[in-house]
Length: 379
Image (cartoon, rainbow, N blue to C red):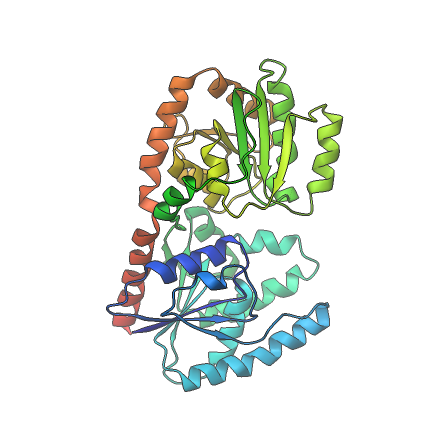
């Protein structure tokens, strides 16, 4: 059987990482894999296995709203020609735009491939923050509710919200969490990075894009409160993004200069995670929380806000701590609780490592294989 995985690009992101990890661990005895990218961009293109054929629709998506619309429309006949010339049993997509384009390309085609959309985010919530969000929502509802054969949600919450958005029955949904590559994490942890020696006894690390949705100002304010009781706390931010200037200004306002550090994008974040005493995710929402799962795989005690991702991954007090979203005092209290109790840290870390084995990439790839085989056999 031939599965074609379709995405916008392979830049560093959660959906892109899932594609690469599925390509790496998908069983080859019964499957042939191909990847289609709408634009030939991304730091992870080189990580695709050699036996996965790569086909790109264009070199780069243009800038400008109208130019992007025209670019997307021109890709539809190109995709149609690809599927006409290449036998494919199933198309697996990860983001809404590639899914819409392949649905348009295959509309009306006799004996077309099975279309399966792995829904990686709360699409409706994302559309609300966009100027053209209503148009995006209309496209998704009118096209994908009819043309997509099956939906894979990465959490129960994403399934419920996507069902509501599209108005499709739950029988067309499966829940498969995102994967983490535990083998690679364990290898990368042992590779030394440009780590800064610890200045204090307690090192907090957070990994993620510096974006308002990550609510990292809440973490800064919580660190400022916690340091009034424990002056040996330091905090490192791994990642970059549009919120950096605002966060740096807040560091000055909170008198945290020298105690909080912004490292930027790290090719190997796992070495930084392994250096941490506590990992914190302060997001307003996380549909899954790959950084949370990776920290758990290393055995670091995790504090996370009560998002969908944290709710799926963490049992509060058993394999991590969960605090209310946006609650600075609760987050500061959780930081101090772990800073004062090394035994609890060890217990949470050990349970966390055991918990996320179920998200290991080979296991998740097998779940995708089994689902597609079942759907194809019904056809």
